Length: 363
Image: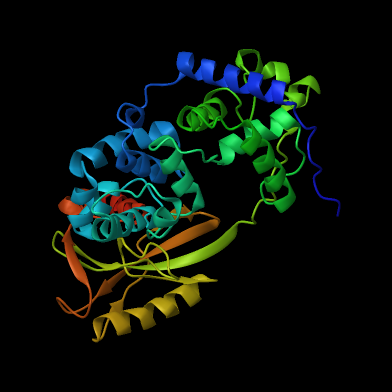
């Protein structure tokens, strides 16, 4: 298969004009986002981790709550993981919170409680990859690193009419080549934030606001009247359908939970004991085996008291709620009062199950 071809090479004059137009637009139009007010390395780091796979409007209240609870890197590093996960609760993708916590602990130990200003030192922190290191170093330290995320890739692909999608290495190389030439070496912080901003507010995936775009004069995709054709859509992963048998173990106003869900999912969060299966029967069989291991005592499983539908990434899950009786305090189960679950590091699925049980008991 023939890969994407490199776009037309912009002249130095055109590149300078694009850069000036972009930065002038950013001065006029930048949203007053909370992490832009005092862009310390720690605050930029937290915001960039939160913004991975989460929309800006969703992130803002979580970011503000997180910074109120952990105003400094040292506060985060010294906090128990349970508390970090509790404050993060609702954002999803909890591995981000765990890595942020581990990274803060490493920064406290190795770099005196500061996010390092050196790329290789930054990459040595747990959970800090190339993107995060570049973002913090450019935005907080104004170092000349180009930052490429999905929004920026879309802007560059349209600007240069670059065919292909982000799953293709040729496409990524072409985008990076253009982006590196466009980068302002004098103002990399503003440049990278401007590219992200224009991708989030103007150069939208659908119905881009081309008349409002400061780069429309140079946009090859717009000149072709094919802005939405770039980038091409990535092949979608096929949805997998799963059954999940979930044990509902209750004592008065308490329920028994365990760390993790099953198959390595939601490892840091409290969940009802559960087991996946390709069918309801197989899920129930696995749940019985799992409970025997967890409780080290006989268990009695009843008939299903309801179902919940839930999705985790590409998984579409049919959750079967199974009442189970075990001896008090058995094994590695932990008891939670249901009225205290909102403040605990509990998964969205567990909250959904509790709501379903409460609906059933009140009907």
